[in-house]
Image (cartoon, rainbow, N blue to C red):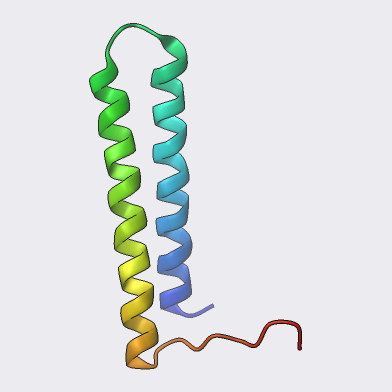
Length: 70
């Protein structure tokens, strides 16, 4: 597995951890919604950053889409 794929997998795992953290703060219900909002903000930032990185990598020719159904 090359370095770019490893980086994408690490970012996806970080997105899932952030989502799980927000779920934990939501389910404990201690009235501190700031931690949940911070976790969801990190998730959105990581998701947008990963999407932009994938678009940039595609435009530079670093990654190529494969045909669907072939």
